[in-house]
Image 1 (cartoon, rainbow, N blue to C red):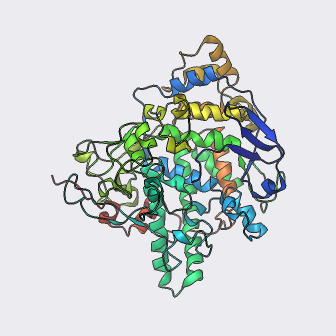
Image 2 (cartoon, rainbow, N blue to C red; image 1 turned 45 degrees about the vertical axis):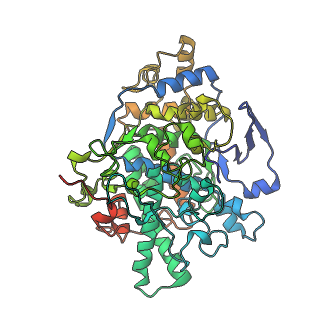
Image 3 (cartoon, rainbow, N blue to C red; image 1 turned 30 degrees about the vertical axis):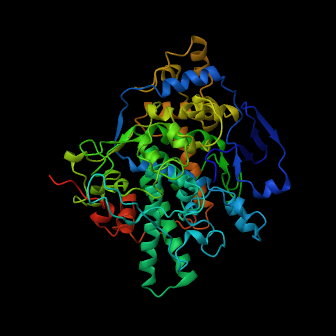
Length: 556
């Protein structure tokens, strides 16, 4: 199984950064094979100073302190996990499966580079002998899975639902954990239930596009390629017009997609647009980890699991439990240690009572579908938490499966997501917020803004010396979150610029690209300029309430 956290990074022009058990970094020259095969990172800015562990612990404790945290009105909670799905698409590394195979250089370059092309869904395609397992017998559609009937709370959940779980290995051979593994190219998309159901939505979207294109007479490989192209273009349109403007200052998004990049792999200055893209470590380890602050501690999930339902509101812990990668589908699991027990529990697919109600994750009134609103008397919907310097305290207790730690020894502090983020950045000697602000020509945050923020983390637990150091050399991830916090909850001049430019480059570097085809417009939405995540879901689930919410609503 692919580990969620990299043990080493190949940074172009720098070498392979590897970390020992104590977190000490060593840089060595790459071998010829690594030059060709490794996923390629880069540095946008200079190296920065490391942060000592005592400070990292104190800052992580402040970031994950228990307490009320503001919501982000107008940003439905599904966008948190769409962002995670996108992260896995960007960092999906297909080169590992290519070792020893006969692949051309173009395929190799594409496979080791960040691109927004849904390779986390498609892999290398149905003609690849290793990836055929993800596809239906026709070699065009993608497989889906069937849920497990459960008697709680009623007969409505005591039936199997075909097409509402990820496909899984199943069978009778192997360990319980192996039988639960998802049959998808990137197993990370089964580390929590929301991203798993998001991946399933993309499978259903692809399959519905196949059905529509088949009516034109296309068959076989031509049908698959046409469907993939249409799906990827619409997906990129969602990211450009619906996702990014919700999390990044829209003026920055507009500037980047209208006038191009100014700092990262600028055509003619740093590279040719035909060169294979890299991923800046400042994006991977800092700016794009903003989504961690959007996570809620609990979710109104469906008619069973909501604040007024028979199962109560769905905790974040439960959304880890009901997966095959981080969890074990065992409702009796109560602690992260229970989830670390990979063979625990009798179920091997998602229980029927945990199917998502997508009306609670997205706002379908944006598409004029007032009939697709979760009733408020039964919990209603969810919005994200504001992008700021606070993480919900359940993220201090990550299940080991979320960071590839099952079966390994680690310290308890390493379950804390904020500590993990700060530690990885320090190990990589990531540039500080001030260094990147100077590089981008952005007005730096003041000492008062860094220390006090606007309703975010309170850093009074840091010593005076630590506070002074925080002001002088702010870890980039914390800086990006503080910048968003004081800017109304969207990424600003540092975090927003890095994020928007990397998205633009990743689209430009994809074989299928709306950046390279600037006159392309969506055809599956309400008009030629509109295609949002709600439109993707409406198309994939045929616009039907009983598919977007198969468990229905409680009877009043």
